[in-house]
Image (cartoon, rainbow, N blue to C red; front, side, top):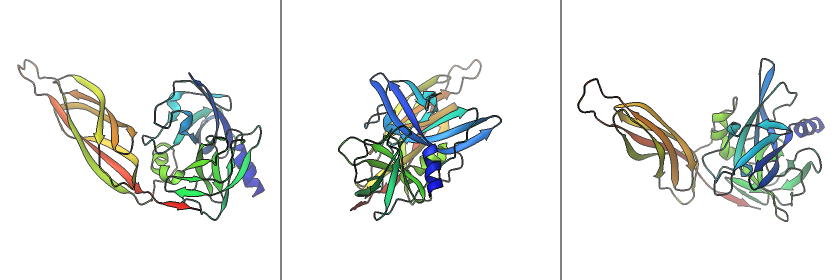
Length: 301
């Protein structure tokens, strides 16, 4: 256990995000290392609150650094679902002795204690017990705001890192976002993480048919509303075009996913008219979205 604790402490790094409103400080944990030639790519997890507010509005970021390593904002991946409060950051370094930490996608038991591990430089870990638990998060029982880099710090039990601290204000118990709810997002962007085997409810929703003039390019955003039961929580979404007609390029990505709406960004290009044609049919494609939902439960201690 002592060796495991030492290895974990070495894999928790400070992260600083400089914004137009001031600097934000937190921690991040190394969860994957990919070696290639004489370099290595680190994948770390931290809190999405370092990069956007609770409503999903991104901060105006001037710079990012992980333990003095400069990070491009393009290397920060945020989930579309604002309810999933975990960010992935990648960094390429010459080489590293850092060990990736094991992840646990099983929510912890309410009867067990766990640790929150901060970055080096001060109070580095604190022991907590679960006071509240739901499908999305757990809440501890002890103020952890004195922990160095508390925001974004990993929450750890015997199985590994099971969550990331997303709220660490003074005089309040910490809130931890569970990795179990973020597993589809993590598996999509971090090599070596298995897809979720969690039971989810998939729902296919048809959006609008988007038109584009013949031979022209059209880009923009579109909102696709959907209905759900009050206890269902949307956690992941993908989008695609179907039934394309007279289209030579069709791209669509999910920007945000909230409780009732998916926002998409699309690009469509219509097929050019044939030579000497006097008429040309506009292009069109139908938007379809798949939304994964889980039914939220809760456990109070």
